[in-house]
Length: 393
Image (cartoon, rainbow, N blue to C red; front, side, top):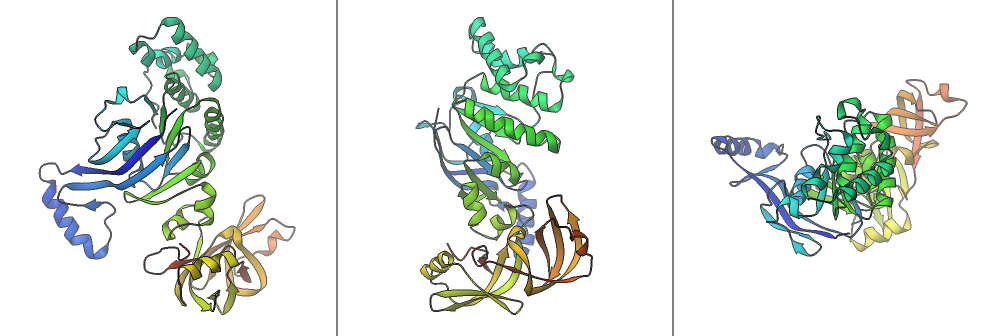
């Protein structure tokens, strides 16, 4: 339905009376400690900075990151609910910076559903169409079609208070899709649901995406949602984009330590290690054990001119395997997860997680037991100790 372009978008929240001096003092006090999450300038607090992204027609893009990283602010600027301080927003090639929200042909699903409590489900879904003076028979057709897609036809005459959280969220989504918008915006729509319902609604959103021809921009702090829903993921931190890529790209080739630690569950294991270059070959050295990196990783490191150095080594728990020889560790806790066991161990002065398949001897992983683990050079990631940047890219 529409392509969306964001070019160097910036959002600054100006100081209100009396805040400027406090902010400057805080900025000066915290600067040496580097603990300020969002940048403070003379203009105000910078919530989003240098955000550039091209979203293709019918693409599903997910903005993901921790609370306060600027993802919802970015979405609200696309919706027109927040003014754009600097930069340009285009929808279908048309500049939208000063276009009113109602004229952008977008629909938004909010975290708290935002349903009218005194209206029935049908009236909630039909409300925006009535404001647009759409004919009654067309309203009836659109609402019933959306209700059928979302399987809420039987609830059309109920009021929101008579619905469960999942049903209310379906109504909120239905109210958005009846408008047949060019762009569908979703701001953490599943965060108020329990775990089982979130899994069900994720599947429903995937089905919905296949049935309506709309461009989706979806905001979440849940990396599982991002990985399962998105064609591409935009990972944000402190108002800046950290990496843009497909779920597989950001999982297999994290751009930096933040992305590596944020994407994947359980989180990636990190070690203080050494990278050794011998000709065009690269090895990691950890706990007296040497592992050669895979040829593709060696080629990328050689292309970047990387030499021997101290590095932060990253290995995902699912890529860490028990071995007869390797890095020595001691089991602290073992968690039975059904199809696998999560071993929490101490190794090289770090807390490490190892995922092993469930076996008949699962009871043998008692606390205090000494084990060894290893990993493949294909699944190891090396990061610069200062900048945190992935040395392959």
